Amino acid sequence: MVEAQSRVLRLVLLLLPALLAPPALCMPEGDAPASYAGAQLLRVNASTPDHKDTLKRLEESGAVELWSGIVSHKKTVDVLVKPDKEQEVKQKLRKVRAEYAIVINNLQDAIQNENPVISEEEMLLLEGRKGHRMTWHSYHRISDLHGYLDFLAQTYPQLCSVITIGNSVEGRPLKVLKISPPGSTGQKAIWIDGGIHAREWISPASVSFALKELVENFEAHFHGQESTLGSMDWYFLPIANPDGYEHTHSRDRLWRKNRLDAHKGSCAGTDLNRNFGYRWGGQGSSRDPCREIYAGRSAFSEPESAAISNFVKSKASIMKAYVTFHSYGQYILYPWGYDRKVPPDYRDLNRVGQKMAQAIRAVGGSSYTVGSSATTLYPASGGSDDWAKGSAKIKYTYTVELRDTGRYGFILPAEYITPTGKEALAAIKVVAEAASQEP
Ligand code: 0X9
Ligand code: ZN
View (cartoon, rainbow, N blue to C red):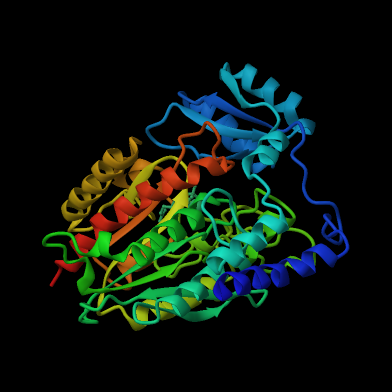
C-alpha cells in the first residue's frame, strides 16, 4: 500500500514539470529545417552505360542524390530529385531513354509519417514505469538512447557498463555499452556499431534493440545448449556519429556525414565511412568537402573515427569480430570495399555471412544478399570494415545494410524497428558464435 502510494507520488512529481511548463517551442533556432516538400524518390532503370553516365553526371552536378549508389549487379538506381530540378532531370533521363517509376511522390509526407510522436506526458509515464525513455516503436533522440545505456549499466552492474571512448566534433560522448557475461574469460571480444551514417536511423534503433535483448533477456540468449556466446565480451556503440544523428532530427532528415566545420555554413561534414585509415583516399571517396563521400582532410582526421580505431586497436588482440550496421539494401558485406578483391580467408567470411542471411530469413523472412563490398555494391575506400580487417586484423568483419530494398529507403517507418532489430540480433548471434570459436 505504502509502496503503491509512493509510486503514485513519484509519478506526480515526474509529471509536474511537464504540466507546469509553458508549451515547448517546436522550431529549432536559426534557419528553417530542410524541407523535402515535393521531392521525389525515383527508381530509375540504369541498365546501359549511357544511363549510368547520365546519373553520375546528374549526381556530380548536384541535381540528384543517388540513394542506393550505382550498384554493380542491379538494373535500377534509387534517385532523389528535388522539385526545382525535376524537369531538368526527367528530361535528361528521357533523352537517354532511361525509364523510371516514382516510388515516393512527396518525401516530406513520408518523413512526417515515419516516426510517431510520443508526447512528453507519455514519455514521463514510461520513464516512471520503466526507469528510462527508450522504446522500439519510434526513433529516439540521443538523450533517450544514451539514457538507456546508463539505465542498463545501473540496473545490471554485474553484467554491463558504459565506457565513453571519445567525443564527437561538437563534443557529444561516444558511448559504448560493454556486456561482460559471468562466463567471459576476457580473452575474446566482439565489436558492434551503428549510426556511422546519420540518416540511417534503423541502424542505431536495431543495434539498441539487439543490446536490449541480450541484456534484459540474458538467460534466453546466453544459456542455450552448447552456446559459447557467454564466453566473451561484447562492445556496442549504437551511435557512432552523434552530431550527424542529432542534425537529422533537428535540421535535415537526410544528413549523412559528421558535422565537421558546421559553423562555416556550406559543405560541412566528412563521411566517416571514408575516413578510416586503410587505403584511405582511394576509389569511391572524394577530396571535395561538398560531396557526400568526402574522405576528410586525412585518415582519421575526425574524432569519431579516431576514437573507434583507438579503442578497437587497444583490444585488437582479443577482437574476433567487427560488425557495423548501415542501411539500406539488405546486404551482408565483407571486405574488401576499396577494390574488387577479396581477403585470403574470404571463404570463411562468406560461409558465416550466408549463415547470418539464413538466420535473418528464419527470424524475419527478409532476404539479404551476401558478398564482398566492392563487387556486391560498389568500390569505396576508407570504410571502417576495411580498416578492421586490414589494419586491426579482425577476422569476422562485416558491414550489414539493414532494411529495406528501396520502398522507403532511409525513411523506413518506425513500425519496422522491431522486425529489423530481431533480424539484426539473429545475424549478430551467428557472427558472435563464429567469433567465440576462433582461437
Ligand atoms: O557506402 C557506404 O559507406 C556503405 N553504404 S551506405 O549506403 N550505408 O552508405 C557501404 C560500405 C561498404 N564498405 C566499404 N566500402 N568499405
Ligand atoms: Zn551507411
